Length: 568
Ligand SMILES: Cc1cc2nc3c(=O)[nH]c(=O)nc-3n(C[C@H](O)[C@H](O)[C@H](O)COP(=O)(O)OP(=O)(O)OC[C@H]3O[C@@H](n4cnc5c(N)ncnc54)[C@H](O)[C@@H]3O)c2cc1C
Image (cartoon, rainbow, N blue to C red; front, side):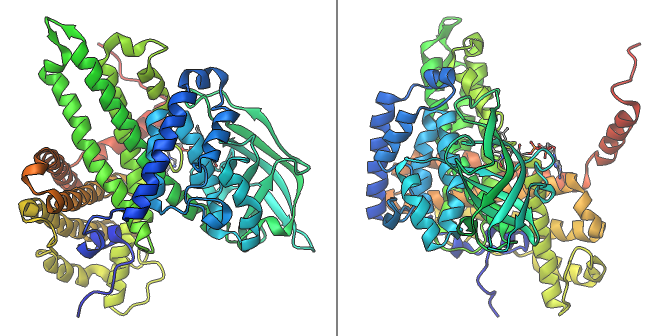
């Protein structure tokens, strides 16, 4: 019997399956949308080239009201919003293509617009009633108003469950809101989707500037992204009318999580745009600057840095747009792919900025250097929209749960919490591992890329076997074994990235022929070879590691209160 359609591609990988019909052929924009996206990008470029100055934005600490207005007038602030409400009606892929362009200009601009569209007004777009959409979206899409998203509090950073802001339901269905939020982008602007505890869990509320008791008193000073209006928000007996409640009471957690799943994707594609600019800078600088009688570009260790940036960008870009394509195809669960894209993109960008920094030597370190600014801006990406280590745990545990759930199905045991019921897995494991010795293949890969496809298919089989082995070894305690979780998360990231790269390059070969795609073939091969080596290393380290020593050293250090070894 054939498997039912998968609800999540990445979870399928954990279960040893490779449903390649979900990822091949590589998704692309329809001709009509591609034309509209090109026109929007051209309009953004023309406007920003003339009007946007990142140095002024840093100095004035705001991207500028005129910039917001100008972008709004050009249709760039309501990209996915339905035309009915004044937007462009783009797909997730179309939206992210345009957001990529902002990433190439400036971190502050990219984040202000990302907060506005990807997370600020997104809950209204996704979960609002017709009335709420009609009231809020036209102004937001036109840039007459800006939106923010307020989840974080002093005691609720990664741990959203600890939110203390409280919304008390009133007899007329309105809420009385009290509490405080911190580090909220666009926090001093017009509309904020905020989350508070209520009688049934979390509730999502649309807050508007001017509501009595709602204030944004303090602006934070930050290392980078200095044009982002980052605020503390206070709520003192704010009466939020019934018509500003998003979804049902208790829906808040789902609304927040779903919104962030979306937001992480445009952070990823923003990184694509930003890295293209870094590569341009690297080429320009290293070909112009000479030392030892030669351009820097001619030294092997300079070449290595440039080629690493190019090949990783190719792999990452393939993965980022495969993910947006999954959303557009209506795949129900893309939470893992979106988290994977956010982790990989934010870390890749950080290392890319560092490598360019090194290539530019002392010139990069000068305060007015664009790379110094990029370095300051980049540091927060692995932290916000889900700290990367927390997301890694999420990716690994979701995958492990998918494996455990599958066991439950086959054994006809209703496992409410498969991790807790691990004891019954033992018999089953041997059976599954032997089945996964011959994993699915990436049959739709271009014949020229078949060997890459076969290698990745082997790794999918190993991912399944490793996940099962870890479940069996640790049982419920796998939830505490973050070092092993990280290996699984890293492995699935590089497996997914290779599949995306093979899919994209296969489509390119089909379109243009292999000869004409020679450069892409080189790049794809280098990326896949390196990614496969990283996957193999992660699997090796599952058994051969120094986890016990790491654990002991950290514990001893906590107990002693710091570094205590004495130099002889
Ligand atoms: C510039 C900036 C803009 C922001 N904009 C917004 C915004 O617009 N709206 C909003 O709501 N929030 C915003 N935030 C908040 C941001 O989302 C949080 O900073 C983020 O969720 C992490 O929370 P935290 O900083 O409290 O870190 P903590 O939760 O205290 O975590 C700190 C570190 O501890 C480690 N850690 C935590 N939990 C675990 C775990 N379970 N396992 C392993 N390691 C763990 C991780 O290394 C993590 O990086 C912004 C933050 C910044 C800095």
